[in-house]
Amino acid sequence: MGRSWRRPAWAWSSVSTDDAPAGLGAYIAALVARLDEVDEGALSRLRSVVGGRTARIGLDAEAVDVTFGDGGLMVTPSAAQLAVDGAGSCDRATVLDLLDGYLEVSDAVLDGRLQARGDDQAVTAIFQAIEILLDAAARDPGLRALAAAYRSERHGGPPRARLPAPDASRQPWLLSESPGEEALLAALDLLPDAGSG
Amino acid sequence: MMMFDSLRPPGAFDPRAAAYKDWLHLNLVDHRSGVSGLVNMSLHGPPDDPRSQVVGTALVRAPGVGWAGNVLSRAAGQARIGASSITLAEVAVAVDHTSGVVEASARLPEDRLALRVRASAVAPAFAVEQPMPLGPGWISWYVVPRLRVEGSLSVGDTELDLTGASAYHDHNWGRWHWGQDLGWDWGTFLAPQPGPAVVVARTTDRAHRHVGELLVLVDHGDRRRSFRGGAVTLATSGTLDAPSRRLPGALAALHADRAVPRLPATVSVEVDDGIDRLRLDYRADAAAQLIAADPLRRGYAFIHESTGTFRCHGRLGGAELEAAGLGVVERVD
Image (cartoon, rainbow over the protein chains, first blue to last red):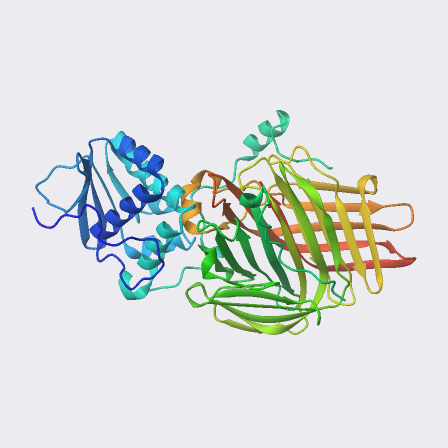
């Protein structure tokens, strides 16, 4: 089966990038271990959302299979012959554009830069799991340090190959509400402060 | 011209220390190029709590380039914090009240932004030391409506000498948790000197349906006027339809439902106390959304910064006034 990760050997509470996790599997294991350390409730929700499913997570050329077993998180190098419930993949440039606020998740999906496959429940579980991690990271410097370590050029792979485009040339998929919707909200007095005060 | 001021960390027995917030803020507008920018260093949570954060923001809107810069969220222990300075390696703001100078710098090469600014106060400071209610908490405010700028800015492939640009500085501190039922409207409008500087502010609830008293400050040469209550009206109209940069990216991904914020396209402010009067019309042309996460309890707030142009006219201190310039309007919910 190859190498598997359960809990990382490092305590990820400092911000040093010198001992950053090496590889996608180690990163996922470190994220979940840190979540276990700082927010048990969030880890419990994560396990509940994921259930007994196995997800295949891909980043650039690397892919791992992730599942929760009796012993906790299991992360193994992806085995093509193993059937999984859902799969999500993207590349480093997409991750950096998301982290730096140059790309919306919806645009990444609709542009094909972020791919998720599986039945609706499996795909929803993948995104919910990511949201739980992002929410916990807002209150934990250690989780944010993991993102910073990934972002660092020394350990996270090659630097971003291109700079983001000026926002004037970027048209998001989600546009403003239609005039009809605006008029309806105004008629129902549901706009925040359309008048004077 | 500045009064003494400093960061206001909670005392040892402050029962509301967990809700501590404090920041140093500088807005820049370059009248020649149309560039608008902000540098903000903020502290969230008590100094002795390892979950507390320092957030450094350097964000510039340049015509033809868009928004450049980013928001850095770090453990508070990573910042160097002085009596009136907050410094990260990439972004910093420091205030010297003795000389009336605010210095700001940002080095964000991956985000196409570098700036170094020395801003000297040319208008007296205005302090609201008495805490103002803000949701279940409170906020206090120290503002310098106009500063003269020296410095340089590199945004995208453009290098700018900021001599002649205008700046605004404030220091806010208080006790609240992001995500509580609170918000505010604020704006700074700077015409090139010797034109006026106008500041508008009010606290609100999160939905902006219940609003506090509106304060309007007008500085023009050696004349300063402040207007409140019934002497002031503020009206908004339209919806700004412009792509919005949302930061930090991780929190934007978490709040995809807020990707299209409903922001006003125009803001009009009218003041008339029977002696002095002013009408100001602002039109927004771009917006950014900064997402604030509380470090100690689950909660988020959305700080929308729009940039645009304004015109104003009126009568102040017996003299007619007519001016145009650049403005920044902030809406928090």
